[in-house]
Length: 445
Ligand code: IFM
Image (tube, rainbow, N blue to C red; front, side, top):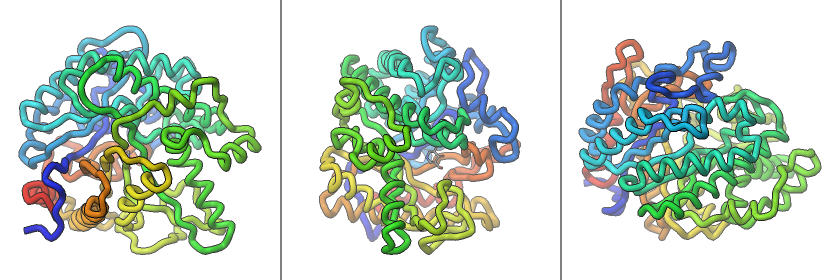
């Protein structure tokens, strides 16, 4: 009997994304995405190993669905490759791509697994990048047309949708150059982030226009910043970092517009995006739920500032570090759930759309991932506490089903509850997968 129970109708799922698992980067009519280009450019990703093969999910999707069924997974969150569906990003449709996701969705439904589909998880078609990418407002129309195709193709079978996953990736890609497309232009990046919010609004409009049943939201990653000390400079840094990160999106989505604090700072820096009449209304088009990806918090110090906080430096603020270098701070999920209510009055359903951990650096046997079990268990306990206190959290998606391609880290970070042998692509459930199966069966930890 578990100590901590989740509600009977709580959904337990797993999550992945197209570029990270599919492979088949140029097969069956798929066009290249910005990540195909980026990872094939020398010097951009760990070991210069591109993600061409992903983990061959395109070929092995049936096996992967069967694996989920055997683990008792109730919902599968995955993303669509825009350039598999529309090789040039706009105009021409690739029927083989449409059919692939159709088969995947049918297979999931046959096995009793609810599909949860994200339209955009970082892999913009390269052809659209060549026409200005997220920086041009044209992207709003391109995304709207793509969304209409998707809802028309799968709206009869999919009941849970997200427009964008973690749009902060656009900052990392256009402002910092660390992700695709590898640009370092802060002004362009802010405009690109604004345009992404507009595209989200247009996607929600397309969903409502399609009239398909189901619910749509957006997925944001929440890394709350805690000042290392009470010093004003640490507190200011924490506030600025949150404004630059998740609040850049939450403020206009739920709070009526960009905050005064952010507006002043970006205007002074000459990087405030251009906002046209009607933009803020479009961005704030009501959503049905909010997806929160929560992994940890960030402790910030003006003295030891690390803007690439996701790459641990040798000065570690906070405490209680996992073997992979990230701070173990499971209360982050409870804090994030409360933050959207207290700071934004959000009272619609919440899903924890991602949470997980990469294997430790000293892990001897890749299947014996006890640290992952402790990590996920603790997060589930904090979610249960938030629910007990009245929060409307409907489900949890463990990142990730499979070891996969971790963006600029290539295959060096393994987040899967299922091990993948990169030579043979053989899948083997880790200890955490079997543990998660038991959590789902017993409805608790
Ligand atoms: O792998 C990523 C995913 O694509 C987006 N959220 C965080 C995960 C782990 O870094």
